[in-house]
Length: 230
Image 1 (tube, rainbow, N blue to C red):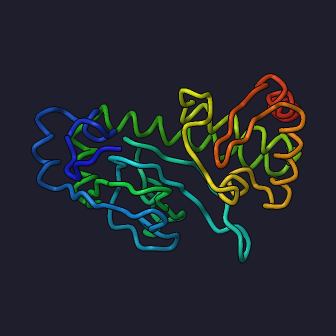
Image 2 (spheres, rainbow, N blue to C red; image 1 turned 135 degrees about the horizontal axis):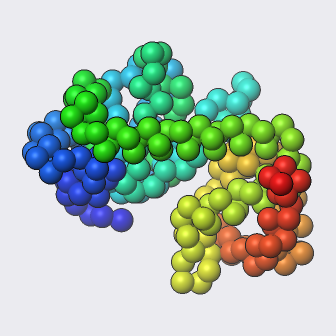
């Protein structure tokens, strides 16, 4: 994790895709905010005031699911954008974002961000592609929640996490999550997740070490998702 709270103007999506001549304007308008583990960056229903980019740390983007549960929509890591779903006509965030670990976010007020989009065509195009891909993934998630058996959803969650965050030198997924967060990401109850993890471990599909998860047999995990993805 980066130790300097000041953005380097080159790490996040915004700075990478903007014109170099626009970077001084970003430097003037951005605000770097340290976020504690478990702290909300914004909450579902909050009025939209700006856009966030992750300078360091990992964040979960989640939504209320029923009266007491939450569904994790996605995980976001260093360099990625948060709050872009607030760009629509509804001036309230439709999701929440919470830090999974100590993080630093770069905050840009909405007026300046909209001016940035008008000036920087490459950023606008890439953001459009990103949002289209995110919409496709959301549609797949909804389909899976309705049609995929819970074991398949949990298998898909492990594969997705490994694909997004990679593995450490020991082969474990390079992010440690609570069992509650994994169950919220898979759309399963905590009790069901606990049972399925034990089954996957006994069947040598995964290995567990504390909060660490290592995929041993990806082919068999993928087979559990084939019923819907084929």
